[in-house]
Image 1 (tube, rainbow, N blue to C red):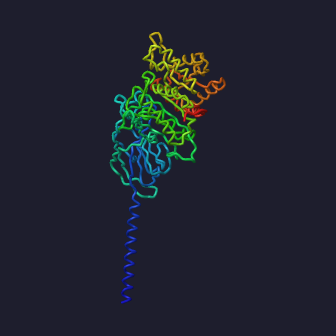
Image 2 (cartoon, rainbow, N blue to C red):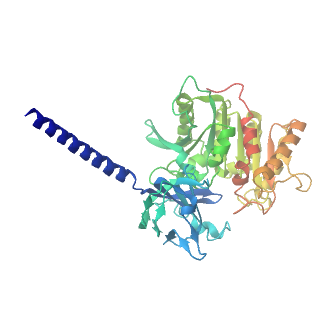
Image 3 (tube, rainbow, N blue to C red):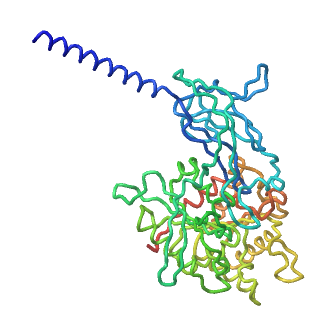
Length: 481
């Protein structure tokens, strides 16, 4: 009996081991199956707006770069083909998930898409959002075929998948911002604000170094609709995103904020209306950010484009100890008072007050035609010319502004330059300003060097690292908060 029980126990043990091994083998087989995890459409904000530039496929295992190809050489190998009317320019892999980061192996496959035309005027039909309707709808789906099997680094096979319908979106730069909503219960208004939070600064902490806060004052694009988030100040053009790139944040880690909400005429015309609930809400938001995060309140900076300069200058004059420095692009103070009879006098008075309050750098394309003729039929000057002449008037008032024009325009900048060449232009003007003791500057761009028009001076301005360096060099000795 005892021997029989022992034999039975051994038999059961063998059975259990067999079942265990079978289960383990089955689990191992399942774990070895490679598969597509997610497919996404990748958008970028180029100089003239947001557009689709790539597709990203995430697989469960790493793939060697040589395992995928898009080539017509014999024998032809086309790992992927696209139904949509866009060309495939190149394929690459990485483990970072970041576009244009080419690595030897990686679980992410990027499929970069070509542009129909790189001309800034004709390319605009490729922009994601509808400029006429000022809306950013959900993107049309992309349909991609994985035509062939792909062998992973581990030697497993990802089978040919047939058609992959892609609707998920990755928005480079924009996805780095967190959207919050401030509700003003007193007047039943709301304002979304989009905040870039540096890594490790999600909550206020005693052990964290306080960082600067960069405040953006957008033009009317803040009202562009996109499923309630109002991200227009981020996707219309990239002047905000220049401050949040990996390179920019490595040099100057900082919080960056902009706003979005229902179209509000008073915000961009506050000098005319004298009041703006949206601007009041924005000032409350700025204060709230300084309370919620590790913000160095002596290093709060303001920058604007076009009509966003109106609320920015109003905020500077109403809160003279709030900002340590400001940068203005594509605006002159005469335009702030276009509904007034005494435009000239008011425009000069307000610029005088701004320059007396905060270090300022003003930019414009010399032949920017916006606002042409509003000072009267006899005034044929363009915006940059008006700004240049305002600088001369300010110097007569004792401001010592460095004006980047010269005798015949020889000191103007080339707006086509980027990188080190563009920074050299800024460094040259800054050196001249330092030598002459100029706290504020005016820079004008050579006609024809800004695309798609001379009004879009924010692209060569805010992409310039030396311009951003100038902003961060200032510290407010008597901060408001």
